[in-house]
Image 1 (cartoon, helix red, strand yellow):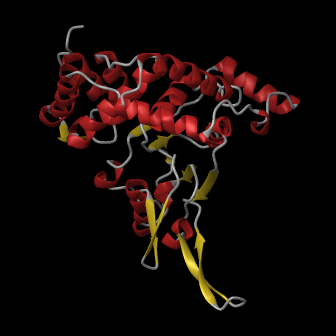
Image 2 (cartoon, one colour; image 1 turned 90 degrees about the horizontal axis):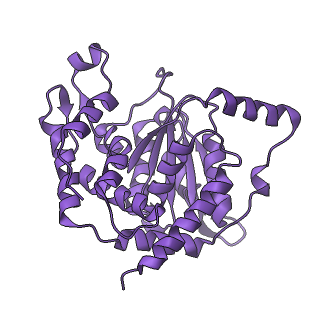
Image 3 (tube, one colour; image 1 turned 135 degrees about the vertical axis):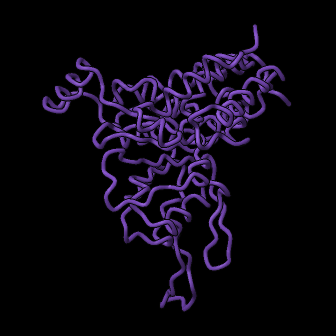
Length: 321
């Protein structure tokens, strides 16, 4: 049964309550917060790119607190093994049998810090979990309890000793979110709170909903209907990335699907039971920026992926309301 329109008014109130709590400790990054919430409601994973010390751990810890979910963190390093991520079996001398020791991926919200510092085999172990929502340990499958979201981080400056994610693996992330420094006033507030011992601790945030509430929200977002004209617009945007001069690799069909999924989440966050072209536009940059590779000559000229995509958004015809 499709969710009723009044459910989405309730959904918007619930999202507002979650956002309000998280903003108490994650200051000055409202766009980042909204994009991460949209990915969470859409049941996807997020790649966050930004310099260290901008509050990424605070964000996901606070989000877990608002619905009573579990949180785990993995610091990716060059010597990290796949079993350090997924888990392994060990022999219990007391019972004289093998037992499964589950890894940190068995959680609701997982922070994969500096994912590009681990070798490809370890990266692949995490990406398999993200895609399948299950882990195979010594031939036995273990399903992860929903909801599950991975928030993986990359440092855009420090590239020495890293293993860049290939395009096929980047495509597994629903969105790539860029996090930058806060504004002057917001940064002053953060510093003053820290130095004066003020501000809330994450443990003091209120739990505003339950795990079941989050699952209901995710199901409602997934069931939200989208008119063919808006779907066609999302497809046109994805296809335009393949035919634009200066783009070496465009977004695939998964990119068009991701645009619609995130558009549904933005609609639900606004309390609507329908997706507008503006929802798709709001989703376009974080959904497409990691699925597009610009040609070397364009990169040399100083043009960024976002600037190229903004040009595509401006010139791609949107359906009239």
